[in-house]
Length: 71
Image (tube, rainbow, N blue to C red):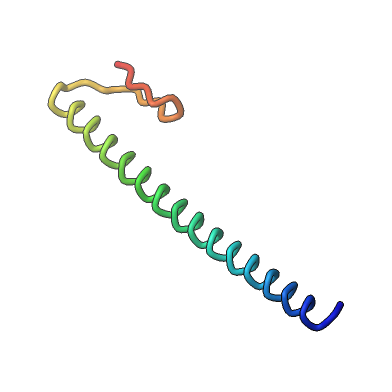
């Protein structure tokens, strides 16, 4: 490759690498935020169900895989 073509190619590869790094960092951060949010929602759900069980004097079966509350 001529010097100019080689420089352009290397600049292109560097730009692609930087773009993928930014994409990876952004998706990793989004996944972390999502996981934290889901964990918080599950905690709140468990607290609300526990409060209902206490107030109503009942025991609820919780199938977290389906999101069902069955008494």
